[in-house]
Image (cartoon, helix red, strand yellow):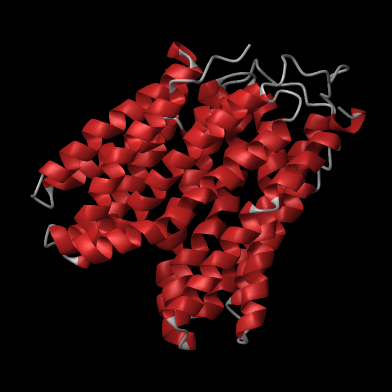
Length: 388
């Protein structure tokens, strides 16, 4: 590892929130801009008269822009400290989304969302690398960082919808200043940490690429489940349970809130019972959670079930990120780029399959399919071993 990539000394004597609050807030800010794109897509259809396929192309631009570059950026972060990557990434993520709401030509909007995705990709690998050091080997601390991203996704539609309803797509420029402010705070935080750089940057442990590859397979399977839940949960309430669109939106909101709680809970379980056991427990718990949701036919009682489903679906989230870095201790930036970027985004590729199933069997058919996928995740996670 290059001397420029020497990790920062963890302030392990500080309380978890105090040492992770900047990283969690920055993660929430970065993922806010990922969440703004799907929240804004309906307004591109209504205001710009885009077709559904063209609107889907905008979401795909942001997804590809954020997913594909994370591996090379992670490799760069492992070779050089490049402290500017995270702050600049936040600004680019915001500028891309903001200008996409101002520019009218479709190719220019597409390019702006690619730029926004690139900004998100620039943030995650170095942030995951340095957040791991600040976490000081604590899964609970890493869960705070991971939960920050979930909070950002949750806040995006809540903040964007009233602004877009009132001001139209041009309101997206209002989201640029928060990223500039957070980039300044993050840059100052990193500058203070530079004074704590340790004398030795030699990673502890041996890389285990086979275990890392198996972990990514587990995460991809779980990503398909999470994407599917978020995509079809509102439609399940409307089409299968006969509820209003408002109650369907409530179900999605509660599922996301359960996910935040599950991420934090998973960190605690990981510290107490071990990382691999936490992943295996989270996979196994998904089966009764899906079963309970499919059995309940009252849309209000089912709100409790979807909250539990969101919780169980996210128990392994922070643990997967930390364990990935433990399997590749010499390349924490690369590990973070893959676990936070490529593997998470891969679940989106399975959604057309679920869409075909839903066309023929309704949203319930999609959820029945998802209910069997934890079996695959369980089989894969059975091969995981604790890091050396």
